Image (cartoon, rainbow, N blue to C red; front, side):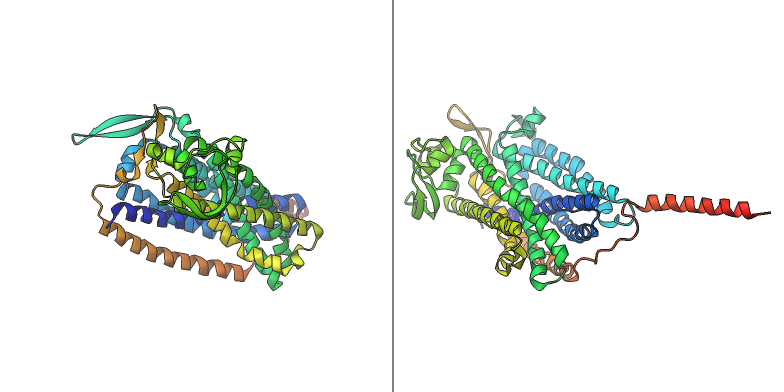
Amino acid sequence: MDLLLLSRLQFALTIMFHYLFPPLAIGMGVVLVYLEGMYLWRRDPLYETAAKFWTRIFGLNFAVGVVTGIVMEFEFGTNWAAYSRYVGDVFGSALAAEGIFAFFLESGFLALLIFGWDRVSPRMHFFATIMVALGSIFSSIWIVVANSWQQTPAGHAIREHVINGLAFPRAEVVDFWAVVWNPSTVHRLVHVWIGAFLVGSFFIMSISAWYLLRNVHVEFARRSFAGALLLATISSVAQLVSGDLQAKNVFEHQPAKLAAMEGQFRTEPSAPLYLFGWPDEKARAVRGGVAVPGMLSWLLHGDSRRPVPGLDELAPVWGQPPVWLTFQTYHIMVGIGFLFVGSTCGAAFLYWRGTLFQNRGVLWCFVLAVVPAVVANELGWVAAEVGRQPWIVYPTLQNGQPVGGLLTSAALSESVTGEQVLGSIIMFSIVYLLLFAVWIVVLNHKIQQGPEEPHQSGPPDKGWLDAAAELARHTESLTAAKSERRP
């Protein structure tokens, strides 16, 4: 059994399943802030009803996300012990920061978000919602920092450590902020955030469109859909700009990855941009492809005649990633991105015209659109991680040679066998299928149950502290009145 392949498959299984939920939490958190903010501004109970309903869905996603995320922490020490030994100082500091600055913030205010509706004032609850949303965003910051460092390492030094008489290289932090602001952090972080906003907003629009098609909870669904559509439209357009900047960053720091993404086998001027095709690594060409001549050169250099390095030049230095998988996942992701630009801008136009919610065909499209939103997020990570192979920590180039990286084949644990990894894959598959089934059942129950009917129970500004103060004043006035009546 191929231990390297099985270990990579195991990690891909666990992280791709886990990554179903954090983008939902990030995207839905932004929409929750919008809904509660609108309630405080307009005092419309319908916004509060919408916020309460989506908070219940948010809590379910948060719980499953936490459970599935714990598994990966153990995998670093079981399957990838050599990797953990090499990057522990760098990766550990980022994960520690994520726990201290993000997870505690998010989980600390989560109880107020879910259970505090009638126990704290609306303003305090709105503050808790903001803190939970910021906590999920801060969590993504430190995870992306750790992953970006693997793509474009900075702020570290390679030093040898001796363990049981054996010397091992180890990356140690020498400049923490250089680690944080490594060359790809900002580009990757913005790209991840926008992708999460798209997943969260399309998730909300999917459920809202379903209610509209069934003609139930109509006004609630209209408000929810409108708020999510606003976020989705802005995010779809912003993702085009972010994707262009990210591609240029990859070209600068990981040129072999970009060549694999674009199917650029040969260095040539006026490099074409393939819209689709079938890369053939043996023939060193893209078969059946449709390409725009000179477009790749123009996107990367601003000049359609300048050459773009191909894998014939880059692979001897950086190694060659698996081209077919990198190419296809990247192009499907980009294609879905353009689809979202058209669909959200078209829906926004129909909303402006006042005909969106009467168009059942469009609503059905949005019921199903959450699937490609999730797929695009997953495929983006696949393209990024497969494209950096054969490196698990990408090297830097010095005097024309890669220096300081760690090969994926050298990152495996010495004491784990292929049979053990295969057994864990089977076990994780069964557990995750059951967990996914539970998530679907509970989610369906909450959707079928629907939101509560909007109601106004007293002045909207009064939480339990305000109510207690008013009760004390009322009791005091009654006591004073009784005292005046006594002879």
